[in-house]
Image (cartoon, rainbow, N blue to C red):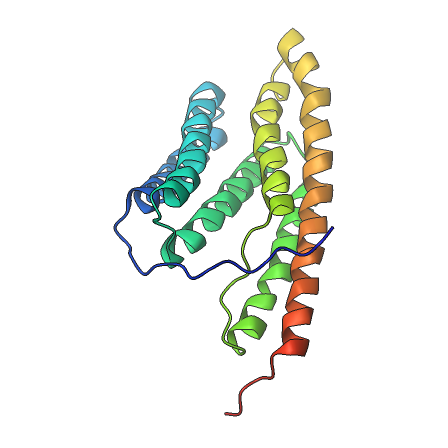
Length: 198
């Protein structure tokens, strides 16, 4: 799979509808975490659906209204990662999943985050999220409602459990594959762009 191309310049505007939608997702995050920890899974699912809808619309509107901004490029993936972390830690604290899964995904994010200062020294911002990364995040965020259902008792949980873990498996594999592509792209930029003298 080819590396993604670097995006065109993003604007400096902060107060845009897409950015407000991303901010709404971040505001809902502590509510979502509290609901998961208190095992209010129905309400947590509603918040997750609202968050997923705003995630879709902020990207669509940013492109359609030409409101792609640096702030939005930071807020959107940050919100995705925080929802993933919150869901995983909440489910692990409840015993619904193992802490190994939390470590696997957090470890990938830590590895990719080490590319940010390397790129910054050469005048680049964080790399754009490419299609494979979006597919990984989609798979994981799709798995979470199913994991919440699978944590219960009865027929719904029995049906949800295999689908939940299938999406977890795909999500983890794609997440690490996307991380490898980010590292490879960073290495290519490092080779082609000399570090400026201090």
